[in-house]
Image (cartoon, rainbow, N blue to C red; front, side):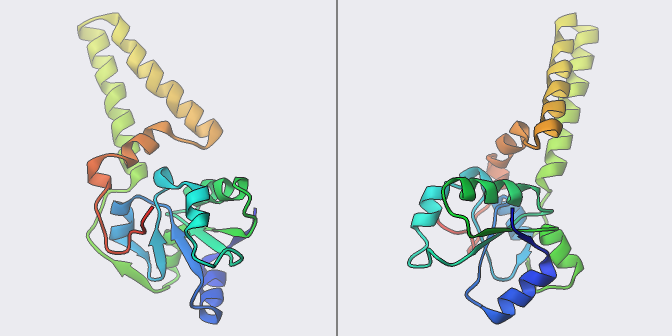
Length: 182
């Protein structure tokens, strides 16, 4: 998989202001802070074939994909590549690295990261399972076991079903003027 760091991306943008940078975080995360020239296409809404078809004559131009740290953008880049488009590049370090490097970003209203929301939800479900297992019926321990197994699966496969589900929640669907149409 092709990748660039945020400094290389900035150099590429300086040479080509038409560079296409797609941010695959949730609209709420994007609204909090994003690279000034990024457009938002959330990972859970990314349909690579529709995205590529809607590029309006830019079919040969490269696509750069960014997220918070580089994990979701790597998944998005792989989806786009699997759809038959090879000229896609992951931005290593993501928006976090862009902010740390002092690159131009747009800041908006503070939002809770998707990763933090997943930790809160998973932890809450484990605690609820243990409490109900100890007070109501032992079978509720299964909830904690299920969540634990899901976390192990997420770590091994580098995917997170809970994260994808939470990304679709209303508080993560805040509309921004920069949000690209599907």
